[in-house]
Length: 158
Image (cartoon, rainbow, N blue to C red):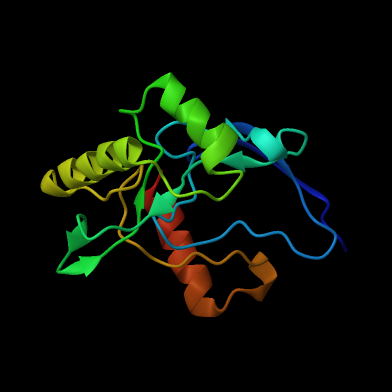
């Protein structure tokens, strides 16, 4: 069996979105915030050299010595609510598609936003969960412990 497309409606941060899956590999995984939500700004269509593709961004993470937890540098998002529309457009049309460094004024806004969330006891990413790995696999491949943990998680989120 080959899955070609995933359509998500009203699940976590996703309201209504479809993903076409690649013929060999498609990644929708892990780390950072890690619920794989729509971030602080939602799903942003990438422009620039990627404008004719289905490329999107929900987060664009960086590290800096200015943001540490327990003395360790952590990833934090640069697509934060304090950006102007002009800054968001610059990020999605130039910085992200061309894999360029984040400009200093945008970096400073991201650092301030991350520090504020840490001070509030929240995670730096939207939905603020601690970093963890996320793995997608068919239910039929879950171990008994994984199935029990998933069932407990679903009951807790009702």
